[in-house]
Amino acid sequence: MMTEAAPLIVLAGNPNAGKSALFNALTGARQKIANYPGVTVERKAGHFALPNGRPAELVDLPGSYSLDPTSPDEAVTRGVIMGAQDGERKPDAIIVVLDAANLDNHLRFALEIIALGQPTIIALNMMDLAERDGLTLDPAKLEELLGVPVVPTVAVRRRGLEDLSAAVENRLSGNAPVAEPVVAKERDHGLRFQAKKIAQAAIVSETAGRRWSERADALFLHPVAGPIILLAILFVMFQAVFAWSEAPIGWIEQGTEIAAAAVEAGLPDGFFKDFLIEGAIGGVGSVVVFLPQILILFLFILLLEASGYMTRAAFIMDRLMASVGLSGRSFIPLLSSFACAIPGIMATRSISDPNDRLTTILVAPLMTCAARLPVYAIIIGAFIPARDVGGGVGLQGLVLFGLYIFGIVGAMIVALVLRSTVAKGPNAGFLMEMPKYQLPRIRDILLGLWQRAWIFLRRAGTIIFAATVVLWLMLTYPKVPIDSPMSQVDYSAAGRIANVIEPVVAPIGFNRDMALALIPAMAAREVAVSALATTYAIDAPDEEAEARSLTERLQSRWTLPMALAFLAWFVFAPQCISTIAVTKRETNGWKWPTFMLVYLFALAYVAAGITYWTAVALGL
Image 1 (cartoon, rainbow, N blue to C red):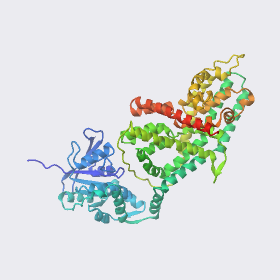
Image 2: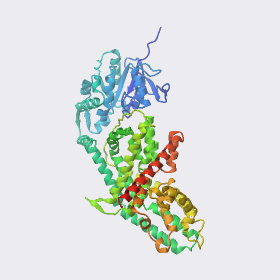
Image 3: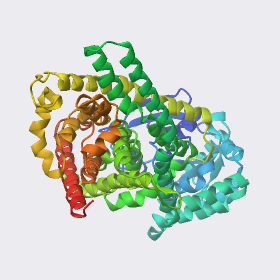
Image 4: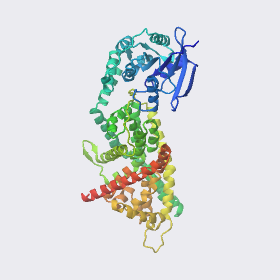
């Protein structure tokens, strides 16, 4: 006598809908975890008893946004629901778990499943959180609109489980009607519109706070107003980097001058005194001075993240990303690269499409990381006048904003080329949940700023200090003979290396000192500033020249076309060695890091050359 197999019930829904909590509440300890055949996606299965005592098997499917898979997780979910997954039979019933507080977004996936015509039950989960946020829903109205049973639940508190089990039993017995499938033309944009319309109809009441959030999204996510607001925020951010940092930079400069004067007065002439003044204080101090600008930049980034706006910025950028073959999923890793390309490249692990991920890794170094800011700041401060161009807009901030935009545009063009050649493939879709708007917590912001300051100062005390010391030693030795007409820099080991490189970069306007700064900058971008400061400190012909600031020395030795070419170089030049190492680890070999180095050096050379030749032709 054959025993009837237990019915197979599956839990489906968007990520963060509370499926796992509902699965644990229904199955308790009667569950096991394994992998689906042929993939690394986790399979969670367990058993629970229906009201009539009949056992049922319950499977918690991976969170999905659509039945059109864009990741291995979504492919498994589709395969199980459609009965096409290896080792799985077609489910007898589907429980779609919805976040009651985010109903319009979650309903889109539910409508796709309902359209299949399979026995479906809606678990309207996290009702308590929706009510806490000021939203009251009518489950009966939602059931009427969807044509399938809707059961309110609070999985973490085990509320509604009996009603949910009863609804499953009724669907299995055929006592509940099956909804008519949604017609094909209502998919995609039509489904989103339909989901929003149904969600609005199911709302009994909502507080002013929730309505304010919807009105804010209508403005911030508007196809025209949204990008304009995003650009305005970025513009203000870069204006603030210069306008707000002037005073604290002055304080740090005064501190380094006091330290150098104390060493000058307190130590006898010799190796150690020169090392402290020219290497440690002059070199490292020239980089630390830009800490206020870096903190101002991160203040804006932290505020945008904590307020909930950053995810909306990703949504806004999705249209631009799609035009070059990427998706909004790439925005967060690329945005992280504004801080440092290393965490940005590591963040690409969340991108499921391999071609999309590879392209994002290869263009991440084009985002202007915080390490470039000292280079930009010193050149802009030396050659761009600190004047308003109208309406309170500063010219220096405008140029900095332009450099960031230049990098972004360059990254988009490179991404388009890569997606059409070495990373060719279909574009991945993009769906994401919008976090709630909230006021940033001052404690969290201050903690984030402290962490960024500590990271920067630690780099200044380790990588930058070590590179500066090595460069200072190479600039100091061998000592130029007393009767030699050569300068110490030209006679030194570092100078001789720079003189070999100079003919290669001379066509794009670079002199020996600029060539010399490019070498240690591969350790960390900020070292370019300390390299220039150390070079000019050693090359100073007398005490008066030695007392001049780095800005004054640059103005006396560089022309404006040379300075602009140097900025263009750093927009595209490869990142530090650590970035190359991370790229090697994330791509499992040297093929793509080598490709990255070659194309970035080529871009940097061409961009610097075009900038220099154009500036000279214009008579700048």
